[in-house]
Length: 449
Image (cartoon, rainbow, N blue to C red; front, top):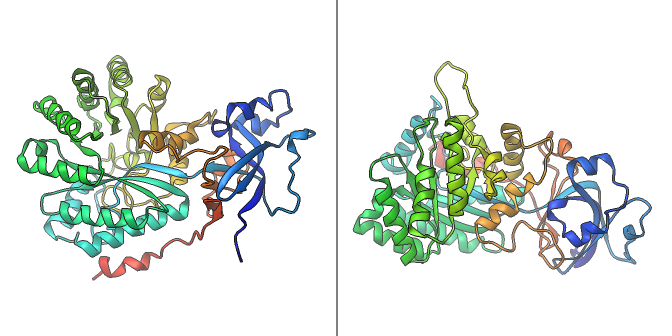
């Protein structure tokens, strides 16, 4: 059956934050149901023409605006279901993914995760070309089926590994370019960029259009390492992406140091910091001081709620005392662009997950209390991470934009976040895609041989 190039999606509900203000203004004096008011949802019809959204028509009771000139055009009836733009996953680790069965983290600790990755990658040398390619593509298949359009992945880069890893990344980026926009971030110790090999590696990152990244630790040399990295990034016109304060130690203030260094050195390219967990266990005055510096520096923040809740404050035979996440509400209230992302998936750092940004948003909402009201938090897995990735064509719904959409049967946020929504419909270029997920058995020979 040929897919229609011109049709309507009728009776859908789109979060107000994705609707142009001029269209919202048409509904100012119209009666709005309680659910729509509470969840800030805009009832409308969408016209799709040649893969683009060509018109958005408000759909309110007894309003002439709800009449659509469908004539003989095909119609998809959303039955009041929510619709959002395709997702953007700002912080992942595709190269680590799906090794849990051969390298489980049985004590569940952060150190146990580090040890598991070291054994799998460096000691056993499992990360050969085929292993990496198939596991990373498995993650891409899952992401695409769930409705993700853009992914930034951190890539572990020990010296023996980075050539293979970046080769696999480049091949997958090219193969999947029409489905998922892929970005790569180096994941190394910051001290590595002090060496000649580190400078050469930075050239490799630049060649693939990647991002300079690494793990910031509270060490005496941190400020010097940051200055050197800013210099390397500026020379190559690269942006930066750091792991910061992934710990419950209140003395860890690497986010503060990164922000201060951005300001001191006048670094103008985008800087993103992930995790930032210790911010939530620090004295409020100290935390607020850091938040203001982050705002001044223009740093974007990404929280990884599922992985951080899983790993942080884990002590054997003891219930955790905190949730492990950063002060996301306070950061957002200060005017900082914040996102939430999936992080690790079925590896020693997090033994679960399916590369599904709806699950991330659902868990993030409950862990971080992003409900009552939901406000515009759906942007944290769509338009905000897309903006931090520099992608103008992702995370938006608007006239003239590509019809990359995710339609749910859920009619409210409560319904959306109470079921897994496996019956969603994903549209890419206005066409409903095959959402069949890859079978775990595809990787059996890599995991159990």
